[in-house]
Length: 209
Image (tube, rainbow, N blue to C red; front, top):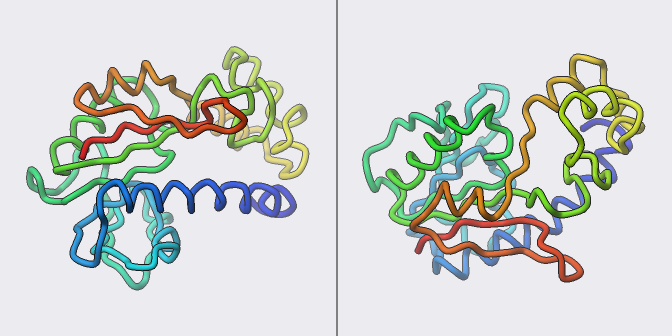
């Protein structure tokens, strides 16, 4: 997110991610010996904790593998290269909504539950009034064909970033916000936690201790 949109989006995202990560650490009593798989994450998240656990970062694309001081692996979250119960906990922040279809989400949910003895999987709430990636009210509730037409010129992201047609189309095709009911169906063994802003649910987490 280059330019002025990044300058606007980054501090908002950081504020919520810091709160989320500290809540995760308290929930799972995270300490230096805790083994964590950060699925779809980044090294910089973990600097916000006073004690860094033993984290492995896994990302699908090579360009997203930027950690330099912790182990990382290129992996498809739908087919993880780890043994059953390999980690104390799997942490997955804002990834599920970027999978292409429901079978992919089901496969990733199954893999998370397989390799983690516990897990915390967060995703933005479909019914929150502001679309979190474009910071535009109601945009995500429009039909996909409308979103593809409007993303470049009728969202805050489009105005500030000025994406090309292909970039805007790719964003729309690869963003599918989920509801609490969707998450509960994917993770039937988990409890569903809600992150609220002004009494509205901004994001949803499936948590299994």
